[in-house]
Length: 358
Image (cartoon, rainbow, N blue to C red; front, side):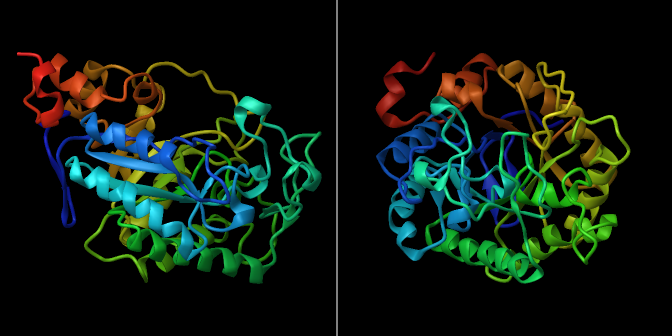
């Protein structure tokens, strides 16, 4: 029986435990460039004992940012500072990952602490907000532009180029963001995709861009390094014309045949009418279902806040890794805390050894 501090080998990498720092937007970059905030934020979680530290949703092109302050990998100049971050993470015995993303119709917004509102060009936003269909997110939000086939192909190439830069930046894991109502999720859900071409209509057509992005990334990503995909397992809308768990299971099966190693199982975020009832571990059953029915490694995420809870998820084979977000904001050293509480041996940074519980 595995537990939270058992190592996990995926391809050429061995993760020292099953704890992952989930991607968490910091909205603290300028023109896509990482800075000291990102170094300290990500680096401290590596010091804190996580096996994998995944950098926030990192835009593959400028118009794919959620806010003007998102990280980016759309130009080579972004690589240098990220190399400093990944090197530090690896020096701590953790592994560095990055989540590649395109915000779709959720782009050009202000940061949460300044209102999380749509930004006009006069306010620092941009007017080329793109989506699979010209459906506004809210009544008070402008409708996005519907992507042409040529623009879709360019987005796929942008993911590929960003992946190549991620490799040069020193990242060891890529996660493709296909959840939370961002571009790839918008494509797969019938609620936000009303296209009638090769990228709309049937399940195969709506999920086509996800497969194309995966295949494009794999052209530049080494075969011995892991590739993850984050999915929203359900739209949380009681309507057959929505994205449902059974759809995620089928897509996960397809992605496994394409070489994807793990599905990071989140949910929701696509439409305002979603009906979510959050609670501790409320998304873990999605990870268990996809793991069992698609036969692929999964990560559980969502209000996982205690070492016992995280350990229970692994011991009961509900998921293979736990992706922890808010608890790592409260406690950057959650990995060390968990090892102490669960009485598991773990190597502390030598600088902190004097404080290690005996």
